[in-house]
Image 1 (cartoon, helix red, strand yellow):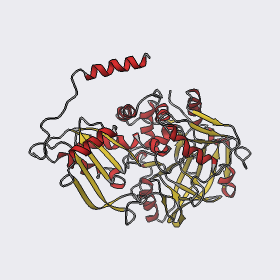
Image 2 (spheres, helix red, strand yellow):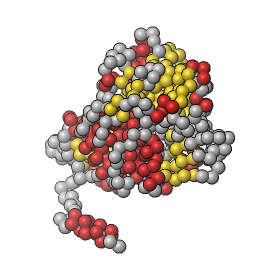
Image 3 (cartoon, rainbow, N blue to C red):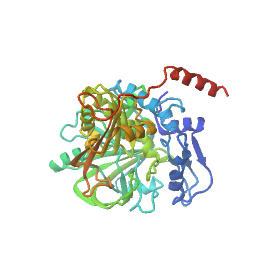
Length: 474
């Protein structure tokens, strides 16, 4: 059964033993972020955290690490919590094929219970804000879905955008927002500014778990995130109209903030401890003026810790980065078997593929770099044979150790774009990219000595099943 709001999902996490309620009184800083920093070290079944006894706040509710394990990610998709990583990616691909599933329009959203308008729309009155890392330049909201539409084609439902962007709180009614150039929001803001207009936005917090997943997914510009949410949920995503902007927003959100990105206005934002595991410095970024806040009574503030991997963001943006690249590659190269883009938001992408002929793996690697995700993120692509599981790092390391000859298998492409947050770039936003061909040469490429590979014994598969049954019966 799909979840229509965050609270119902938290209930399932609790029932499944995947929610840890911290009842002791905690300090807002550093305790909440430190706990979220630590919890993912419990492994692939790490629980979500829930705090409701926070020093200095009379009525705070903070949820952390909601997507921060493969167990939680599986439950978000309605799968058994024991479902493995590759199986989750495979199921994600299967559901992707259902796209599009139109949303379901509903009335009376729970977030309409309370409203703050105009000068009263003070974000500090609604959210128990905290810093996530001690070097952050201020309070951040980093797991909200920002909803906008194309000002040049506002009636095109596919050209609306639902995306996750880091947001710094600059004041009671001011936010700084970071859309990087490859993001849909950046394209829409540029179009609005060219028209001499502000860009209306609705920022939704505490969303159902699938909305957070699709808002983090690198979809095509004219693809509707709510229609993808329906495909992943197996049922239409419930949406409603935001009262001030008229934008379509999730029906079950905890908080909806409406306002505008002010055209041609910029303020210094940052620094912030990012998904790269490094701080990004201060930079001049667009600002949002808050005009209305709607919220549920006793809203749950869902926050996300990010820093040196792995943290929650690495689980949240794992499968939904692998799958779009896989789908885009297989349209051109049906030989592609699997894509692993889980590492640091896909700055490294590992692809397994069959080969038509010599040099084919390199062509696959170059195609990765021209996908919507690859243009802005992928800095290194590793291509392996079809019998190497890209989700099995020992197998990938074996391929690198025995198939890759640095004299010929490192293809460096200078001067390509990368997200400005990538710390390896000498000039922010520009980097040389690398394709590593760790495949067995195919004819007419005759290099190396690969004529006598060791194969699995024919009986090994049956023995694997037998041993699993014996282990389960212990």
